[in-house]
Every structure is written in C-alpha cells, then in structure tokens.
Image (cartoon, rainbow, N blue to C red; front, top):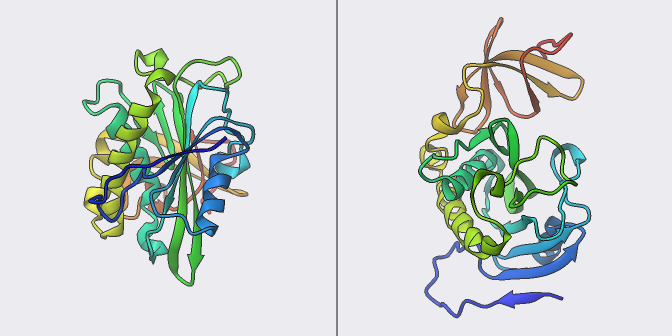
Amino acid sequence: MVHLDPTGNSNLPDRSLGVPVVRMGTVASTMDVARDLDWLGAAEGTTVVAARQTRGRGRAGRIWQSPHATGLYCSILLRPRIPSTAFQPMSIAAGLALCDALDPEQCLGLQIKWPNDVIVDGGKLAGILIATNIAGSSVESAVLGFGLNLAPDPCRPAHAISLADLGGATSDTSADLLSQITRALQSRYEAVVGGDTDRALRDWDDRLAFLDEKVTIQDGPSAVTGRIIGLSSSGSLILQTSAGPISIVSGEMTRGPRLHAKLS
C-alpha cells in the first residue's frame, strides 16, 4: 500500500526535496518506482521510501542488500535541466550531503569513498546511485537513490556497518533522518544546479577517504594506480601517477596497487 504525505505548505521553495514522500512496504527497487513516477510527471522532490527492497541496486549492477526495517531505502526525483557536464558533481555532492546530515560535527569519522560510498573505519555505511534521463546534452530528470544501514543484519556483507554500530540512530528515527538528509541534499543540489561547484563540494578534503594514499581504479578492462591528490570541480578523482596527474571520471576503487594494473 502506498501512503502519500501531503505538506499543506504553499510557500515551499521551487526545489523542495523530500516533498511529497511516498511510503511503501516491499518493492523491487525504490529507483524503479521513482522512475515510473517521473514518467507520470511527478513533481521534482518526490521521494520514495520503502521498508524493504527485493532488488535494490548498487553500482555496476550489484545488489544492495535491503533487509526489512533495518535500513533507509530511498529514491528522490530530480529535475535539474542543466547540461550533463554541470550535473557531474552531484554524485560526490550527494555523498557529502549524507555526511552533513549524519555527522555534522565530524565526530563519527564518516568519509566518502569515491565515487559514491559513505564509509567509516573501512566499513560501508551507505551507497548512492544516480540514474539520469538525458535529452540532447541536458539532464532532464534524474533519480538519486541511496541505501543507508540503520541497524545490523546478518544478511549484509561482512564489511557493512550500521548507524546503530556507531551508536547513532536506528529505524525508529528514520523519518527524522530522512528530513535531515533531504535538507542537506537540497543545499548541495541547489549549488550544483546553480553552477556553484565550490559550495556543492564544500569540505571534500575533510571527507575524502584515502587522500594521499595509493589506490587502483578499475574501469572495464583497464586499471590505473596512483596516489589520490584531490578532486576536480566536476567531482572527478585526481591521481598522481608515474606519468603525472590524471583525472578519473569513473571506475571502481581498491586500496593499493593491483597486479598487472596499467595506465589506460
């Protein structure tokens, strides 16, 4: 059953993420529901939350484990209508927004593992996925999905960690958490749409995991190893390699060198 939470507020800003909220029980994926609502013309900011997902998605087609009532599984409809190049920082901006909401005083040590994971002490707390609908060179709409582990569950991989493990919130406070997260996302999102990449990626140097460490980025059959030295204004990862600094747009990160890694 679907419950729509009306706000009754006619003075909301043009871009009000988290309004309205569509609450569901078990779904295949909140991203699928949000994409269907996009096709039906739903307003920007429409947010789908589910108690459980049977086919939650992560990067590269991976499954996001979504046990019942132990996580916050959410997708938000965006209508940026800006060039796709200008929208590129949104993935990192979204991760930073989760850190803003969950760890505003930086007491928990939350970090962004490029390009889209929130980790702490090597454990994965949240994952982010953005699917875009591009017309010409413009992002007409996008669905920003995230899964946040609220409480421990044996179904999750061993490297997963939850807010409860950190002494933080549980599923009992998921509504408050959603409100905090959407407010933080809105601030970063408005900066992306407005072209203010400095504000969109504010404090990245305090949150970027493995800064100044050697990592390997695998992108298809090619891999490159280097030392992380920063982020570009588009959110690309900058590595110092034996051939000099290079900008990495996409790929999967592992720490340290990988056997037979080569510069693509």
